[in-house]
Length: 187
Image 1 (cartoon, helix red, strand yellow):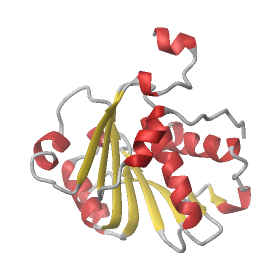
Image 2 (cartoon, helix red, strand yellow; image 1 turned 90 degrees about the vertical axis):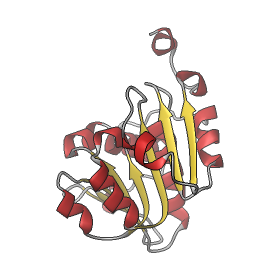
Image 3 (spheres, helix red, strand yellow; image 1 turned 60 degrees about the vertical axis):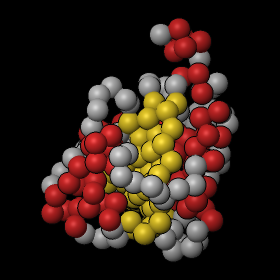
Image 4 (tube, helix red, strand yellow; image 1 turned 135 degrees about the vertical axis):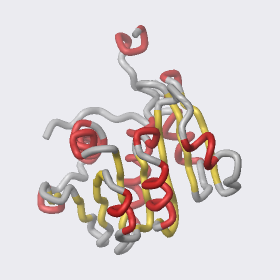
């Protein structure tokens, strides 16, 4: 596995300051939303005992090309990766203290009625139907993360923002990510 360089950025610092049950992060391309939330999740999983954290996206290919790839690269970059802890079939990583980080897609409402978890991360939440997201949030005991590119209004703005009081909501841009190369910044 190739280990990239991951730097502490303004985006990461802003994400680590969020403390409400629901932690919503909108942001454009290269704003470091997903990377920063994954860094937080890795930190959480390393110190928590026997918990379950779940990363959800619209499909397994989306997870494999996005959050799973980023997770593996962050872990390798920091020297944390252990092949014996990763189950490629179930897309789960078991940390030393017994906490499991799982990567799952839910394509049907009924599947979201299943197991509970301690922490949830809805990656690209705008691509996940509200009925599924609502069930996953309901079955999460502690913290719910969500991120998305703010290209159009979706259920977060209509169903959650007007009524939830237990929520932090921030918007990041590429300017919050000092780790970007010059070509990406110019684009």
